[in-house]
Structures are given as structure tokens and as C-alpha cells.
Image (cartoon, rainbow over all chains, first blue to last red):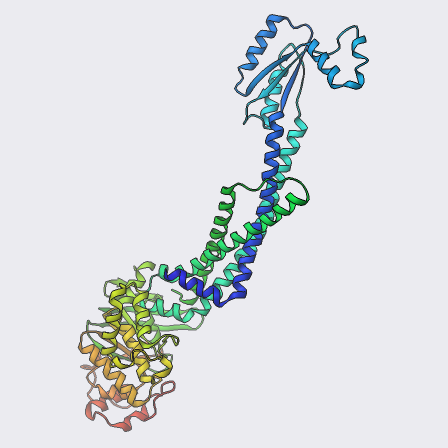
Amino acid sequence: MRPFREALVSLIRRPVLATLSVTAIGLSLFIVGLFGLTAHNISRALASVEEKVEIVAYLTDEIGEDQLRLVRTEIGAYPEVASVEYVSKTEALYNASRELTEFSDVFPDLEINPLPASLEIRLRPGHRTPGAVQEVAARLGSYEFVDDVRFGREWVDRIHTLRRIAGGTALVLGGSFAIVAMLLVGTTVRMSIHARSTEIAIMENVGATSGFIQRPFLVEGLISGVLGGLLAWALTYVAYRLLDRAVFAVLWLPDPWILAGILAGGILGMVAAQRSVRRELRNLYAI
Amino acid sequence: MIRFRNVTKHYPRSGNALEDISFHIRKGEFAFLIGPSGAGKTTALRLVHMETAPTGGEVTVSRYSSSRIRRREIPQLRRRVGFVFQDFRLLERLTAAENIAFALQATGAPRAEIRPKVMRLLGHVGLASRAKAYPGELSGGERQRVAIARALATDPLVLLADEPTGNLDERASIGVFELFRQLNALGTAVILATHDTTLLRRSPETRVLELESGRLVYDSASDAAARPARPSAGASPIFEFVADAADAPGRSETRQAGPEGPGGSAP
């Protein structure tokens, strides 16, 4: 109880500085929160796109029925593959005439069917990454009767890159703000230490352990950090509501992310406080 | 109990503070540490308190040695070594009782024990009736008594006092000094660093260690037998006092030969 009481008293006595360091932590985590929101939404979008990721292997006309059966069974046994659907030349033509209505007049007049038969392959979740897709596609391409392999590679790549950029930006910007926040928390704690230097000297003098002396300052950092985390949560929520209402439907962050953010604030504050406390106490009472 | 073995303390900026000092203070002993400003008295006390480590030699206090003590053992050592300052170092926003309780809390005393112990300590230093007074409401002598009670809170084996009467008038000085003597009679060793020769005259039988420019120039425990009863001209002026005081205790004119302490107590 003592460390909490003293930490609160100390924060209340220096309201401007305390507000500044809480705001700094809040802003740094808000940046992380914003990009987290972006990354989360991209992830969700990616998941729905990935569900649609399918690989189409176009077959040569020479393939016989036995070979087709063999190839289907073999491909179906790949650990990455969820399903293999055979689309015959006739079905392909039918699908094309239905989907490409502007050419509907042309199709009945064709003497030969120009469309190849194909295998439509869907992958299991977890194997829909660009790497896995490419790998399966390469394996399919090595079959003698496979003429060409197509998949939405560019899209998958692009969305993955976008997510990486969002994550990277969050890390760099959030990190820079976190450093500023740590400096501010450090300064606040240092001021508290200076304000109580006589007390600390007396405690050292009568034989208080360093843990006893440091604890209130660490708690002060922790409180600033958690308050900063809560501020970031509030700011991110406001941003989410604004985006959701004004721009497009956005998904809110999962609860564990929010908890992790607030916890990160606490840890940030405590680490900053610890650095300051160690340095200041060494200066104050050198041995 | 406290032993200095060839202790040298060198400060990087200001040079040598102590040079090859050796002495031993036994359990329950009372010793004056005298010498002019800058002679190294405070450095010697800080070495006992292990606020600083010697550059050469070894300081041992009870079972702790300056060359082997671990950082986390220092608080334990400090609980066995009480420290009293010239400027009292009381917390102005706390009452006399709270100042003493603060030391007990800081050293992890059980809550239930704090109050009775504070009252007992205040009684020991003769301030039982001033428990609720703030330092600003106390006289200099009373403040120093509170500081002494605080130093006693952890039941130390020894009290180190750095010019404890430096800010007090003569009457208060004598009162505080007598308090140290009483505490010593109850078994606590005392090392009292001072300029105040009045105190030496009041207690001519007490051991005296004299420092000059970082060297131990006189130790009454080892030098007394070797020196003549009345030293010839050129001997340490402090030694002269002690010798004079031994002849005629209370002779106030010998005072003027002594060095003046900071804010020294004028007779």
C-alpha cells in the first residue's frame, strides 16, 4: 500500500509533468493502436481474400480418363490441398457463356471448343500464404498434362505487403513515440526523486533496502504507463468510431490486443522509471 | 569492532583525504575524532558507514569488511551503525515522533512495534513530552536529540556523530554530549567527530584520535604511554588541551587555543 500511496501523492503534486508523461505514453500507444487497427482490418480482409484463393491448373486435351483420375487423387493427397474440382471442357464453355454474356452470341457458333479442361484447387487455411500457393502451383506445373497454372498471386502478394507496411510503420512510429514517452516518464520520476532527496538520503542512512526506496518510484512509472495505455485505448476507440461512421466499415480490435496495449504502457512506464531511479540513486548516494 | 587497517582514501578530484590510517575501536568504547576542517574526519565516518570504499587498506565493522561487503548487505550494516549529522537532517513536515517512526518504517519494523518503540526512544533522549512537535517548533538541542533517537531506532552497535554540536550553543552542546555519554554507558559505542574542545575538556579520560591532513597524528590509546604527561612546545595543540584538561578540567581559557568549528559555539 505504501508505494501506491506515495506514488499517487507524488503524481498529484506534479500535475503538469504527470499529465505530460501520461499523454506521451498515450500518444505513442495510440499510434501503435491506429496501425494495429489498420493491420487487424487488413488481416481480416486478407483472410476473406485468401479463402477465395484458388489455383487453376489447365489441362491439355490429350489427358486420358485414367490419367485424370490418378492426377486428381495425387493432388487431393497434398497436405495443403482442401479440395480438387474437375471442370471439363464442356463445363468450361458453359460457364464462360454464362459469365461472359457479351459473347453469348459467339459461343453456340463455335465448331470446336477452345477452352481447356481444368482442375480448381482450394487450399486449406494456413496454406494460403503467397509462399505456399506458389509452391503448390510449381508442383502442379511439373505434371505432364498440366498446360498452365494460374492463381491470384499479385493480389495475395500485394495484400501481404500492405499488412507488413502497416505493421512496420506502427513499429517505427510507435517506437519513436515510445522513446519520447520513456524520456518524459524518466524526467517525471527524476523530479520526484529530487523532490524527495532528503527523505531518500535518510532512508539510505538508516539502512532501508534499495527495494524499499525504489518501489514507490517504480509504481509511479507503472501508474503513468497504465493511465497512458487507457488514454491510448480511448483515443483509438474514438478514431475507430470516426472511421467506421465516416469512411467505411471497420472492425474493432480484439480484447487481448487492448489488454496487451495497456500492459505495454505499464511496462513502458516501469522500465523508464527503473532506469531513472537506478541512475539518480547512484548519483545521490554513491558507493 | 571497528578496525581501520592501513586505510587510504583518495578522491579523484581533491586528492588524498586519508593516508594510511590504522586504529581499532572496541565494542562499547567512546572516542573523539578531532582535527581541523578538511583533516578527514567526515571521510573516516563515511568509511565506517560504508558510504564510500577505501582506495587502499580495509575497514571492518562488526562482521562486515569494506573489501568483501556486497551491495545488498550495506543496509544491514547501516542498521548496526547509527549516524548523527551536524544539521540534524529531520523531515520538517513530520513531527518528532514521526521522524523516528520513519526510520523504523524504512527498515521494515512491524507496525505494532513502531509506536511503543518511538515513545521509548523519545524517553531515552528526554523528549517524551515533545512527541507531537514539528522540528520547526524545537530548539537546536531538541532537534539533535530527535536525530539521535532516530539513529538509535535500529538498535545500532555504534553511533557515529559528525560535528553533532556544531550548530548548538554551549548549553545545548553539553546536554547533547551528556546524552551521548549516557547512551555509551548503556553499551552503545560512540565515535564523535568534533571541533568543539569544550567537550574534550569535559571528558579528559575519553579516547582521542586526532587527524591532520589525512594522517592520524595522535591516538591517546596508543600514544599516551609514549608521550610525556605534559608535551613540549611544538606538540599537537589538541594534545595540549587534553593534557591541560587532565590537569585542570573545566578551565575555560584553554578553549581559545582550539580551532573554531563552523558556526562554532561561542562561550
